[in-house]
Amino acid sequence: MSRVLIRKLDGFPIEFQSGDAPLGTLLQNAINAGLDEDDYEEQNITDLDYAVLEEDKINQPIRAEQEARNAQKRIRQQQAVSRIKIALNLSDSEIQDLRDALI
Amino acid sequence: MVLIKTKTNYQWDKKQVSPNPETGEMGEEKDVVALTRQLQLMVKDMRDDIFQLNPTLFTTLPTAEEDKRGSFVIKEASSVEDLLNICIRDASAAFLFKTIALNVNKKGADVASATSMTLGNDGDCFDITGTTTITSITIRPVGDVVKLQFDGVLTLTDGSNLKLNGDFVTAAESTIMLKSDGTNWFELSRSPTVDTTTSFFAGSFSRDISLTGDQAVTGVGFTPKLVIFRITLTGVDGGHGWGWSNVTDEDAGVMDLFNSQIDRMANQSGKAIGVFPAASKQSVADLTAFGSDGFTLNWSGSGSPTGTAVVHYVAMG
Image (cartoon, rainbow over all chains, first blue to last red):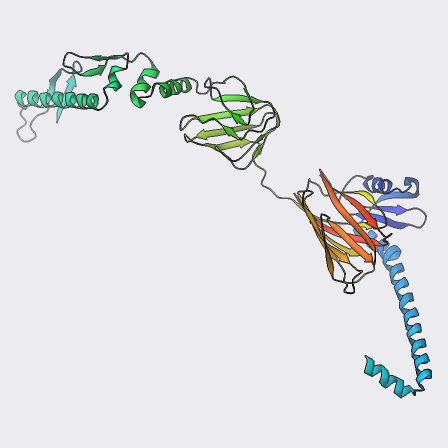
């Protein structure tokens, strides 16, 4: 069964390894990296359970962060379009023509 | 058909004459006498011819003597060595042949391992002591077979006059059997036999690339000889890096996200894994050792990289 090292504070999987092996390797790896072993717990985990954990603790937060960054980017783009439209005194169709020409 | 037997080396005589197949009568004795005489002359001529070709063949032998007719004959062989000397006309080689012939299936004195090792002639089975790598063994006569049993760990190197099925790394009680062709030793068998099986294991692990230090990866199930890696960074679609290592040599196509093209890989010689997640940020790993159940990576980095690397690998052993 695969193994995972969980950060006790928030359940974040610090390290995962496939393959059958005794517990202890991942915790030692954390110690090697200078982490406090008391803050982490090594467990056996099925690949299916790890996929759920990875999605919940790693992938989903990253996607949420990326979506937030993309939303901020879209807002900044819209604000830039509005500023250009006002500065050049363009109509909506004219600013759209400009955007089409630039793309 | 005429049957003739000898009383002595040169005294031929009639013993039996077969009947004439047409008449059923016994053949004439005078014909048999004539035939016997011809055979006597032929044998004598052959002996004399041999003597003319190589007089030392007979004269140097203590068991050879000249008979009353002037021919040299072998009266009685005094030893195996003398007989061999007659055959190969080389006294030193005859001595070696005799010694070896008398020591077949006999354990000789232990032999200390040496780069160029010489076996004793006191047997054909030897214990090899020590741990010195053996690259050649003094040859023995063609056809000679020796059985070596090793007392410790050493390497019998394929090459020179050792024609082996690859290098033989011995352990205590390992054995090998070699046959001489007069120039080289050819392997007949070894124990334990060469393990030609190849093991594969496909696995994965993750790594927080902000961390440095040793990361042992276990669960492989055997001692790898080579590992090939594919690296992705969680949250980055499409980017990946590649790497491989056999500990001694390794090379990585680094996952270089700093460059505008996400799939662009930067070569990182001497590393097995590399991730460049942003400008001036990098995390790399060196495969430092293989173990009985996996391998150890040593991670280092610069620029405080962040993220979780997901590494898929194929270990071969």
